Image (cartoon, rainbow, N blue to C red):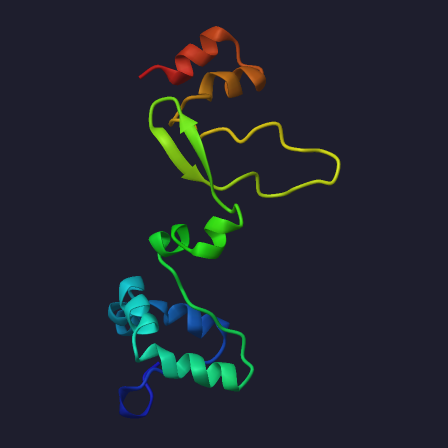
Length: 138
């Protein structure tokens, strides 16, 4: 796997897969999303974006979660909506992901709690009350 000067040499899919750990060890420390976002947003990232634009290569900025939530276009276009969760309060979420010309989604429910619908799903799958109790017992 090592080439001239200790460089990592790879050929073929199997070799690439087997080289995953050494590559992760080499690249991982510099690949954190925070490091990438800091470079991409800094003066170091601007020349790359300009070069890619000049070469007509599609590219764009990368956002962290707060960058997405605070994006003015997404906010103004209605990409996000607020829903009231019975125990968590007001949440920001995305609306139903598709739209149909003649059928509107009836509602966008807040996220369920872990296990909230377990009994209903098991009942729908044909389990009786005693089986459900045995399955869900702590």
